[in-house]
Image (tube, rainbow, N blue to C red):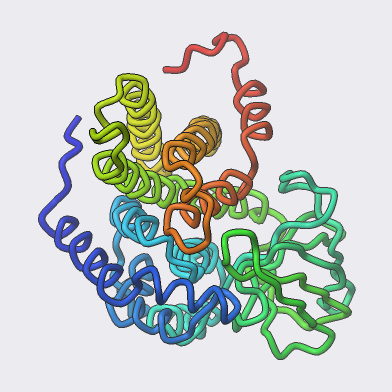
Length: 370
């Protein structure tokens, strides 16, 4: 199998990396964290590169690119630990809106492509434990939503929300605009500095996106797209953190020599590199499986997220420990990579959740997957 990237994909990677290095350096990121974890001008910078249009179809003003292009972008955003909800708006939202009525697509997809609208998935609820079928938000006879959603990315600045809710016929997906009556949000910062919110809906008007006959399948696909994006972002973050650690080991001296020459530390770095490469291969696997049938895709994405969770925890902890005391200070960029990796391990299902998902799909194969 050919794992080489095309010239266009290499150019895309270079463009995103240059933007991160020039316009999203560590000091700017720290300023964004202090300001609450979201910066509209940074979002406009991403849109200016055309990244917000990446998965939007060409007939809706987008670029019509595919999952591999998205993976390339997410790796580079991960290297810069970018806070803005790129995957939510540019990757997940178009995936759901592609199944919506034509008039809804015509209203929202061009705005997403142009960076004018941030649309995020608001699917998590208290007590659901990452289960997508456990939804308490209800729809009344007039199509109004009542319920609450937790940990909504950039939930207090987004223009609209994709909300799963229960109907008498089963789960359906709705779009709720920020100005809707009965909608309120309470924003806060997560441990990694990114922005999230609690969302409350009290008989809030909503637009039906996907009916009960397809909603569960579309929601699962949207979450799998999010998992693949998260895997790629984690690879980028770990890659950069490992490089920072290697530079530190080659610079820090003890007994008159660089500590990189100590055999015990070299062995630890070898283990770190092995877990990073395992994560990279599973990230590729996750992206390439997005087009498979649902049962195959869901199993593959859970396998990938499980491995990424293990890699993120190991790489983050080892690289932090190899730095010594400076590794946990806010002034040093490495601590921010560690915090981001820790938060990512919990998003779209933690490692224990996906271990259970993989186990449930073993069936007669006894863990040997084709």
